[in-house]
Image (tube, rainbow, N blue to C red):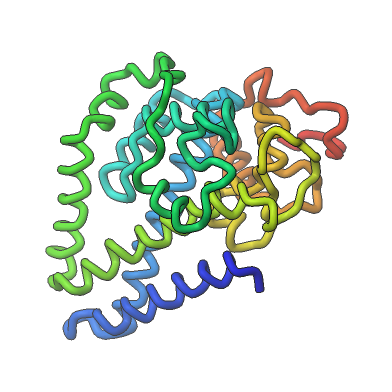
Length: 285
Ligand SMILES: [Zn+2]
């Protein structure tokens, strides 16, 4: 088993065991397990929807055109109840990451950074050297509100307090709150380290300018909503799907197709343009 998968499965198993052992007596271990799993799935799903589907393909690359109220609702719900990620600084860092991939100016990681340095950079990235996030949607009142430090502190404190009061145990709340964020940290490492280090994953395109790799196994693809198909994505940044072959498992694309069926999103002209050397019969969107 690949080392990144081993870490991922270990975090999931240890998290669930910790939920069982820390569950308060009035709940018992099985309810503790169920509640822990539900919180985990909620935070993972909201995080994927918010970061990979909405911020990444909807705003940063403008490959997808979402209903404006939906972008605002997902941003508010994720950052209030799940793991906080500032939308404006994230979009800026992501654009700088594409502009300077693996080189000076990439806020996530430069080529020579190892695993420990990148782990630290997930929490405190390199300073952004320019501002590439001037989109109108990022200037809207709700996105501006979510992006304030006071919102970040109040929302994350409040959702911890809510877990604590809802289930009546400080220990159980600490396990769930930190456990889910450790899994989020692993997802961030899939994106910033394992798919940007040439000894992991595979490449479809031999791009010299970056170290982007594709990682295609079930856990990382599901966890990141397919954002770990980095070599595909860096090669054609505006294409709305990150799998470039029908054989590549693409969980994120399935979620976007489902949202399309609900009328929440449609493709932009640049998003649906399939370059001729992408081995897809059709976009299938
Ligand atoms: Zn991107």
